[in-house]
Image 1 (cartoon, rainbow, N blue to C red):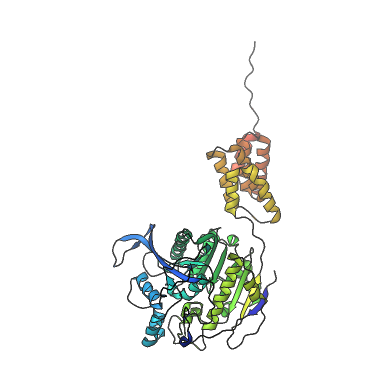
Image 2 (image 1 turned 180 degrees about the vertical axis):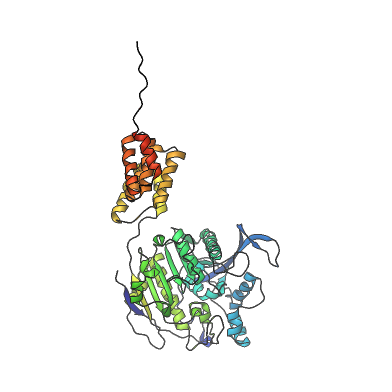
Length: 512
């Protein structure tokens, strides 16, 4: 498939802190608010299915879950929140009195004091706007564990009609998050808990569900997208998923299954991390390997991981070791463009609004002094077939007789694609044959498996077993012989054939 490369940029309109009007905030810069006031609420609950040590090293209790929710709200005269409200919540998240390092090392005390006193856009506890809105689950990243790191982006999305839900990033048994499968799975489960909680809110529409992941949250979001067929779109921000990460994550997670990655995907990352096209032609990245659904690879013109976070909107210019070096240019135009392009992508696949994303793709303007250039690679991908789980459920619920014609139609539309894993179909057939009392249907399941995997000796061996069980001797013999052709060492088929083809012994005749 041919990649389409374009440049996009929007003119940045500056707002100085001294010219702010009512309802504006110094943190949004040139970002345009949507039709809604961003509302905010903090849901404090716990996941009783998991434990976590209590503050101070006490005995383990249910895992605490602090769920930040931004949502479209009605305009109100109530006072807006201050940055200090988010900062204080970040301290409560981790039971610490130490301010976030990017703030205390990136700003002098007076500037930090002024920032903390500055208003943000959100109104805490504001009345929700009427209707139900697409739900976005946001995964946080290493060293940016608090939702404070993305408050501008979340407020911006809420103003444009999205419910955004997230939680702080905590390790499995302590605050430290390790770069391993166990702690990745912990973030995945946290995000899934957030998804379930937020989906129950009356103003959230879980039928329009997106996942956003930054850094480690992008790895977690990719696994969630692979294992949850209800996800409709995935946005990853500077996450190590395009090529193999040094840790092996997320590919070492047992549920990393690329054939299940079928939703619309936009991946924004530092341009320096995207290999040249000829290099990727020789050794593909995830962008090339993803076969189904539209994909967008965005080359962001920055060398700063922090420029994908709301820290880019705080006017921090000093170097902060472990986060970023000294700023050589204003970081806000790039950050604001990330927010706009993200909104355009989400609008296309969750809000039924093609216009903004199409405009970005058509844009061919060159970069200017206040207009960053984003190169976008786009491929539409093939239409995705129904998920394996849907097809297996169809067989179970309606029977193989009704399900087979639909599966064959899907198969004709996607020739050569393994719609259902061989071992899954085999296991289903065994259940039908021995444990669920659906013996006649078991034959149909095994026949489908042998049809999908004609070169599998196991599929033909199981089909022979089902035929033999139902007294269909000639068909059983043919299946076992085919299994032996494919695997001459198949002892089960040899034994079965000996029994099926053995001459019938006649008893002694009686005399009158």
